[in-house]
Image (cartoon, rainbow, N blue to C red; front, side, top):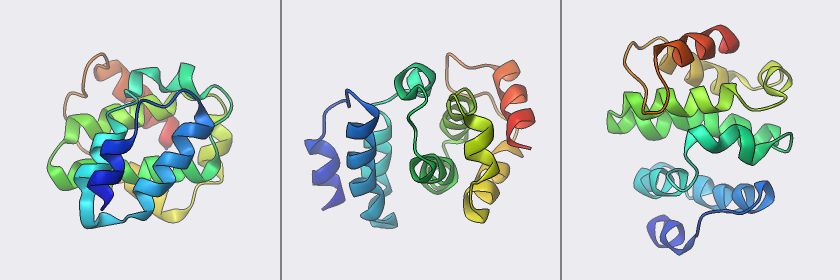
Length: 136
């Protein structure tokens, strides 16, 4: 199951390791959103800029943007959804990744950013405002 798969993973040490594992958990589908949340918890959004550097693939970027809605909003975790997007907005090459993102990823991100709540720490209202500006 996806839950067993997510539990088997350790904190990723590289972008490639993250993307391989995330692809497995993501492909398991919406049947186990808890497994997706558990895997995302291994990489706090505040670490994304440093962790991914310039290596985040367009596919991983899109699924992460979509996860903000599908994984966190489905659980009522608006603050976690906003934090995920704040983290993604800081990733290098964000502009290029966002420009080529698919319709579903863009729709998901904009749905989350339309909500008003405090994001998970260490992000604040200024970070959400910056993310809104970046994702528009």
